[in-house]
Amino acid sequence: MPTTDQPRDAEDLAGDLAGDLAGRHVAFFSWRDTGNPEGGGAERYLEKMAAGLVERGCRVTIFCVAYAGAAPDEVVDGIRFVRRGSKLSVYLLGMWALLRRHLGRVDVVVDVQNGLPFFTPLVTRRPVIVLVHHVHREQWPVVYPGVTGRVGWWIESRLAPRLYRRRQYVAVSRATRAELRELGVTGPRVAVVHNGSDPVVRVEAHKSPNPSVCVVGRLVPHKQVEHAIDAVAALIEEFPDLRLRVVGSGWWEAELHQYAADLVARGAVVFEGHVSEVRKQEIYEESWVMALPSLKEGWGLVVGEAAAHGTPTVAYASAGGTRESIVDGVSGILVNTPAELVAALGALLRDDQGRRVLAEGARRHSAGFTWAHSQSAFAHVVSAALRGELVSDQDATED
Image (cartoon, rainbow, N blue to C red):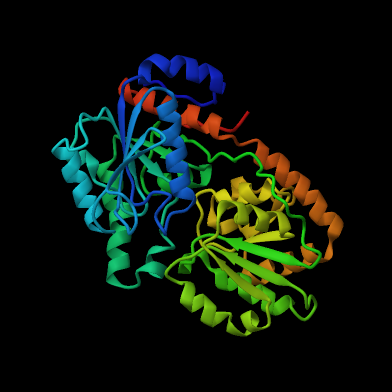
């Protein structure tokens, strides 16, 4: 059974795959797309991989949940979007669409397991690739306390590994691959395809004259934005002009506003909401450092976005993928506790030279991860699936 332990050059892969993929139909089944109000880095990764397949001649469909303001059927940049159902019914509707061939003939299925899989092996004999950003062990009890969370974790940790036991997996980091192995996803079938980084977006902005920290992401409990707010509360006496800019929206937003009410009144915490791409890049550029206190990250796409603007990140090592998107002490700082988060942020706010060193390291590290290379590696996995082969340890970014 062929495996790949070392990455190949992106151009070589592209040449090899041109004939294999042309005209093939790849269907992604995902809870969300990037237009969804709850969409984030995982959805950006999904659409980047889909775009890479389109460039190689594939027909690509993304089946995902419907939401307000989104067309039920549309084609964007060559990718067909089919939006149906709600957070739960989308899984059943996806299986039905695949079973009844409502999407047309499908050659390869990419089943995006965001906690719950789409159970596609039950309704198709076509090759199925399981895309996993991270394991949700810590998130289930936070987002769904009680029985619901326990059932969700049982499905993810027990049922899914058995249902997909002979299927190809793609993980976005080695940390995720290690977690999958703990769940019993073993053998030569877990390919690692990292996130890429976008080229720096030049904006008319500069580093703020006053200490500035940003948090960027969905406002949901497991992102733990409260930890960044607590850090500002602890540091505000030493840095009276300190500002925390919170970028993003989500169903936990009202609770965060209440939690930070006193600091908001003082102007120390600013909720920017859902901003334009240009405004987000401006905030990266203006910030001295980014805080990423998330409970779990498959990779942490925002780390590379901030790094492109010379803004290093302080994050929890236990989040998993942050141990790869950040090189501790070189491109950012990894910490283990909320107290260490406060200490690391305070130390960087005091140390101009230290920030400059990390800023340069962040730019270098981020530049090593390109979407073109990731797309080639993902296409390689799809091509292998069409041939009935599995790919092991296909790491898109190691030299």
